[in-house]
Length: 199
Image (tube, rainbow, N blue to C red; front, side):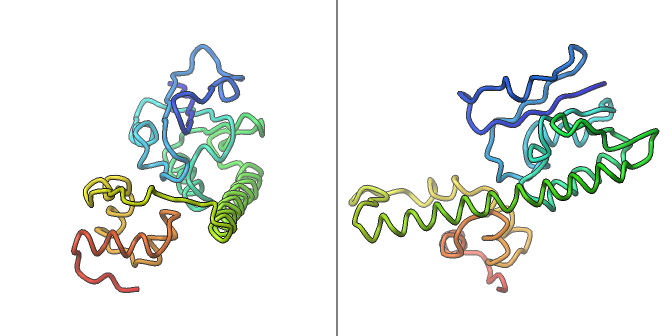
């Protein structure tokens, strides 16, 4: 079976760009989630990883396959090990040729995935700087003063953080993996009352 994997951030985001080269015999696997979620934790991503029927997967761009360079490479390695061909449309190349790893594909994908990760980090850094500037000018309000958020509601926003902490990751490593501040991770750990996680 041939599959096409698509990830969009919100339900109102358009799919056309990722469907440009779709073939009629491809089954669609669409995740609506943040790109910061690892491929194996996305519902359709997980489905693809454990499918025994899929032999060929198409994606519009390499950044659809994971949250960062390491995640993308691990996803591709898993598919390679299981003899699943991955085609990246905007590169026009496949991961396997005659059943063997395509070295040109590996090289190009590694470079592009690295660039994609750097761009994301740059964007987040600019966002943080923008918030700091807005705070300094008194323009950044954050949550409305006097409003409150229950601890339960707060925790439901960070399922990945809870998962990493349960797995025994350090606070700093969890913050890095989940793309949030160390202070937020510390607050989550305090709420759940976990045993000390070594930093």
